[in-house]
Amino acid sequence: MKRTMLTGAAALAAAALTLTACSGGDDTAGGGEGDAGNAENVDTITLAGWSLATTPEFQVLADAYNEQNPDVTVELQEYDATEYDTQMIADLAAGSAPDMYVLKNLKNFVTYQDGGQLLDLSDIEVGDEVNGVDAYTVDGATYAIPYRQDAWYLYYNTDLFDQAGIDYPDGSWTWDDYAATAEELTEALGGDALGTYQHSWQSTLQGFANAQDPAADVLSGEWEYLVPWYERIVELQDAGAQMNFGAVTTNSVTYQSQFGTQQAAMMPMGSWYVATLLAQQESGDAEQFNWGFAPAPQLDSSTTDNPVTFADPTGIGINPAVDADVAAAAKDFLAFVASEDAASALAEIGITPAITNDAVTETYFSIEGVPTDELSQFAFSTHEVRPENPVSADTATLQNILSDAHSAILSGTVSPADGIAEAMDRAQSEVLG
Image 1: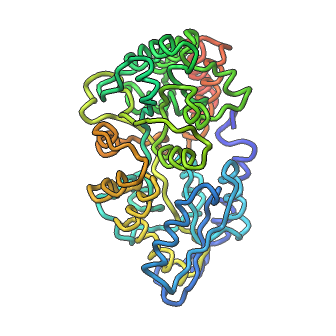
Image 2: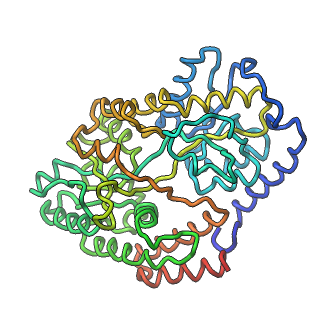
Image 3: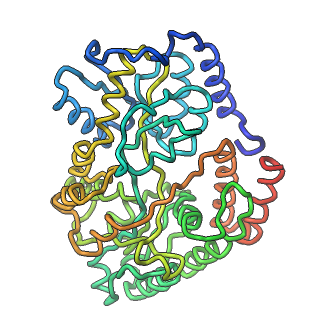
């Protein structure tokens, strides 16, 4: 998917969705308009998920709904986490997809929506407290209901900060403060750990830049604003305060191991890592140490009172091929997904739900092991989350171009300025031109 709007598997997937959408055009398909259906006629509805053994959120939602609706079972259908979209697109085209499926990332939402593979859910009542609904709204119609809204934080190991004699993050840091502290930590820890760990994903840099930089506009193809962001992280690599990108990718280093085994004193990562770290410390996959999370560093001090961070909402849509009765039952489930009861059930396992009111926040911080310091609570409850992926047919291709630039720059193949210039040229010639 590097040379044209959609190539290879993506083109086949889009074509499959389009063909399926065209072939399903009779009035009886897909719980069609004018036939509301009867949810009471359905005792089982199916929902797609991934890595069910280690990702409990799907079963939690299913069980919480079943507790209130004992006559209806939500049956989970497992997909491969890394091939989720490819497999889902194929199943939708083949007519074998489950009744409901999760939109794993916003980048591919347009592929599903434009391909006619999401039922219009505008008749589901969703409260104003639910974050992320706008991201799944096209031309006034809503096609997925968010159940979680992650945010990226700065995780820090308080034991390593104490060992180094350096003050913890206080919520006022800029990225320059973060970089300076990473170098100070590395020197003070004397080889016991690096100052920070930024994983190999483009999100760990571009996500923040696109959310915080006033010049940011992914869809414009004008990406000069990214150059100083890359210069900063290259300097951290060169200073030895951050693991080299080549070492991360060559050795398939995981971010869980770097922070969880105290190889790094800090780590920018999504809010989902709270639940992961708690589980790994309990199982022994992570070491026992004291930690907290702070708001992500900011571009400047103007946003520290309401820190700007990023993350796409995660929503659930309905397969339009289901009959009207199943569609009605699935909509009832999604109405529950948008409720405070569902949010509290997710908060109980450390997942950041789409609703984060006072009651949900209290539930979240009552979990054993979750840091309860004032800054961690502030980071959880007070922030502006901006989506990582703008909703556009061009998003996936432009993000792939930016991903190539990310790898080239951090591996040292090109300088930040040259890498971004090459990416901009590709954006114009391959997509925008």
